[in-house]
Amino acid sequence: MASMQTIVAGTQIDAPRADVFAFFEHMNDRRYRAWHPEAHRDFRYVSGDRIETGTVAHFEEVVGGDHHSFDAEYAAVVPDRLIEFRLTHPVWRLFLPTVRLEFRDSGRGSHFVQKLFLRSGPVSAHSARVQGELATVHQHVVEEGEYLRDVVENDRLDAIDAGSDPAVVGGPSAQRLNVQTP
Image (cartoon, rainbow, N blue to C red; front, side):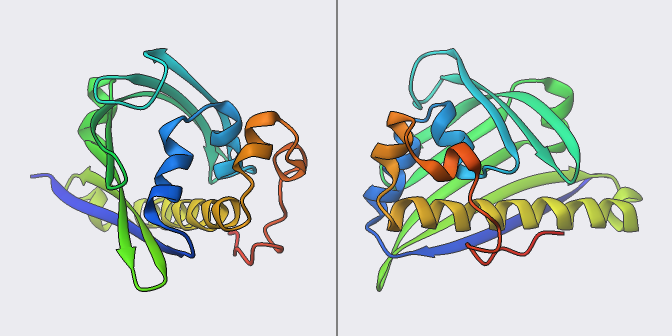
């Protein structure tokens, strides 16, 4: 019997949730790479040209030294509140049925929450190897939140879109953002 696990990472951002959502609203390859410069490799639309329900996008990233390439369909988009997508490949969707990005108000800005809903079998759910891989994925989404905070709080979106943001070209150092890498 399969069991569900959820990886959750939240990041406090000193900006209104509409500003945080705006980063994703017109996602492109530059923005995707800025979201995690050391890991994100490619983003493009397979169908559509913006994030909205039904659009399919292609993502490539390196997590824990492993290259991942996948297409995902945006299943729900609620402006300033929620983006939810699911992988289009039926086999991969068995293991990762849904990814949800939530945008919440908080006392001093907004709270960005990422949730990855994972399905595993009874043996793999307790495997040390699988648990290590899940910890690596959790660290990756924590880092994405840190990079997103840096982009939004330092008002770097226009520079990223123009291709003139030096952090995207050279990649900000993990140390500058106080991100722990495995």
